[in-house]
Amino acid sequence: MKNRIVRQRVRAALLLAVVGSFLAGCAANETGQTDSDLVGTLDGAGSSAQSAAQDVWISAFQRANSRVTVNYEPSGSGAGREQFIAGGVDFAGSDAALSDDELENDFGSCAPGTAGINFPVYVSPLVLVFTVEGVDTLRLDAATIAGIFSNQITRWNDPALVALNEGVTLPDAAITAVHRSDDSGTTKNFTDYLYQNEPEIWGTEPADAFPFSGEAAQGNAGVVNAVADGTNAIGYVDASRAGELDVAELRVGGEFVVYSAEAAAAIIDASPLATRDNPNDIVVNIDRTSTASGVYPLVLVSYLIACQEYADSETGDLVREYFESVADEEGQAAAATDAGSAPLSSATAERVLAAIATIE
Image (cartoon, rainbow, N blue to C red; front, top):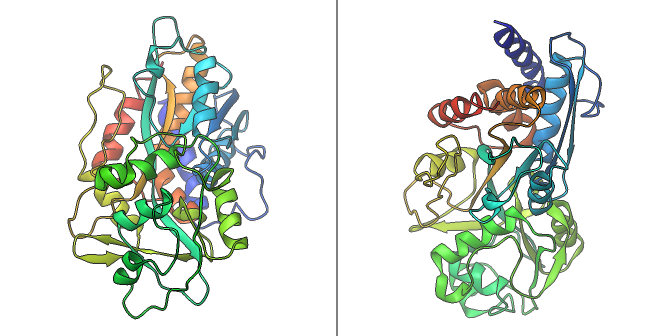
């Protein structure tokens, strides 16, 4: 009964988030306004793609639980996973799930003999933002994107780009391709798309670290700034960070499509789950090669990472309650409205919430 009351209070606060009434001028770590039985502080770190959604989720949770503080540092997915494994934070946000190698570690905050588990809670399209002189419409496919970011296509009037952009005058100018300088799950999702679709052109397996030379920038915000301030530049970012920049259309099957939250969510439901030793560890194997109508395969799935069992049970209780408020219908709707993410489908959300409920 206590947990149900707490979740009802969280839902009420999140409904306010949906209409945006409590976010104006408010810091994410403001004090709460509603008493509950939950007490304590949670520290998290990781994905910068999640940061806007984290602001929404944290504000609502703290308003519903006046004696709880949740801190989140958008230090990047790789840094967040490292901090969580070392026990420096209570949870992590990551655009890539914990790998098999990472699961071999001893986890500093977890009970002995237990490990971290992944929950997909933030889904967003990845987009190619660009500033090209005289161009406001750009069509790309996996082959040209792979060529640009592997330095095989170096000028905007390359024949491969011209062929895709009939009726568009592309300049005879060098391409500035901007990638992430930090180890990033956004990079891993982006390179996974290129590797699945064009393994011969891309040539390297997906990884958090970008494998080729070129202009680099820290975080999604850094890439956006570098493209916005650059000339004839292109970069990959979470769609929620694209702002006023022009966004390329992506070839899916026989048509060019513009990203949407609905299309991003559709590819998640159409993709299988990875086989993991712990059935509560939920990892999506995204089908990046799908050509089905209504899907957008260049998508980021970002995870919350927690211990299956915490060394400190009170921390486990706080993490479980916070994660439930993130993954339920109201939490997903609030992030969609204020952070531009794609809400989990009801079937996926149900499975995620069932797994979150097992956190101890």
